[in-house]
Image (cartoon, chains in turn red, blue):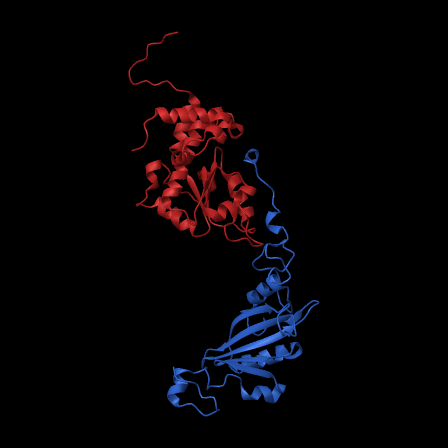
Length: 202
Length: 186
């Protein structure tokens, strides 16, 4: 069935369009408890300028956010607060675990410090570093944007899909594709072939 | 800084203004030993320290308050479990200061298991309220007469006193005892 397309009209799936809107309009919830929070503030400030990625508006109310950035160690007295704030955020929502402490507890292997927030809430991106540079956080947000674009949120079951197993673009670019990975994962094959066809960053 | 006189000689007036409350100016009131007998007393680099028995500590601390020590700087505790040469398990530390003439004094009180208990000094210094709550929270020293002896820094449901030396550094699993939220709970 051939349809004559007027100029300046693009056909897309609604899911793709919604994801495209969402990924370029992230509203971060800064859950900053330690020195990572300083880097988080630097990321939002003028020098690193998170506004370039559409995520510059930090809101301190979870009701107005869709991206929780946990920056710093979380102790067991804080964890119920973290979980409550996470539950108060409305869907769709994502979570970045920023820095060694939020991801693993870091050097604080003591009775009070939670050894990684992913034990108790879902996490989409982990940022290594102690604390990470703003560039690393920006890379995580870019990778999260890729993930939002590729997964979509219409079904509500996107986290069970093979897209979840995609490697971060930063990793693929840095160390190259692993043939064994690609052989096992058809989605990764598609990702890699798409990357080979697309022009690389210069 | 000049060396403090160690022979009990009276320091010069200049020394007194420069290092009031430091060596030379004796922090312990002379009347203390008259009223309460001989107390174990030591001094290290001008920091004076007395050790008082649990039974008389409230009276002694009340007397020290009346004799000028109007500021309770800190109340804390040391666990001497398996400490070389220690005769008692817990050593409480009361850091006192006299703001009028800049004297400072360390008061030590030693208590033992089971159920280490000392009288609260909240009636003397209101500042002791949260300090004693913190010691109760982390060391499990019970302060009798405290108006509100709840945990200060740890969550309500915590049962241990984690700064005791026989408490494992990584806890007894308290930090893992939370519900796990999945995507479906959103």
